[in-house]
Length: 321
Image (tube, rainbow, N blue to C red; front, side):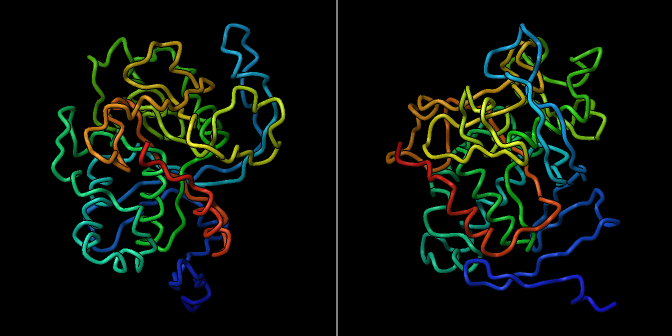
């Protein structure tokens, strides 16, 4: 069959981009290469279904209740948390493209001028390890802009997971049902007060690493302690309407064992940026949130160009605070 039968072109920020059309038998694990870059991202196929979100456990926090039936569609999820090598590629690709000289170059990649990383980023060092360690300290907005950059570079739509998608993968992979949590997660008891290289503990049953512990992970949702009482039953997403609080999941190397749980919910705080060393404050850094990173997902059914544009417009800019 001709290649064009498997490809379609959509308009993305004025650019025609090919989007792969995968049928059911092609829904499998794969590795996403990035043209012209020395990085790739491994993704795991996760079939959608109905699951019980939240918990019935009386000892858990009130914001994890009530337990309720939710259906999510199929998607791919990153096998690992996004690493510094991958995140730095995003930053330096923009810097090397002359963002600070001519913002039109960035627009051609589907990135507008304000979403580029600030120049002082290149002068910062981070003493906890880079390379294959999980990238941290970025705002949710910065994580979204990584996804936007990756979409423009690959022609495949990537985003952050919703809270429901994240919890579904955590539960489907029986991530917190293991007999020895220390074999699967870095947390307060075994982390030595630092994060560790991605994939250095055992994966869950889906083959996905570090869902719990190591670093907490941004999801798409606004945090609300009462959202479960009225959330939609299919593909719920509490669309953000303000900068704080936004939801993080999974717990981190700083957390106690009770937080290393599929249903535990964390959220962002404005004081994470209070010691930002840049003036004006950076679009990109939480100097007090070295425990927050992210991983990406790709929907099984690719959205239309208009849906993608709407998605990016719903991202709330997090800078100057």
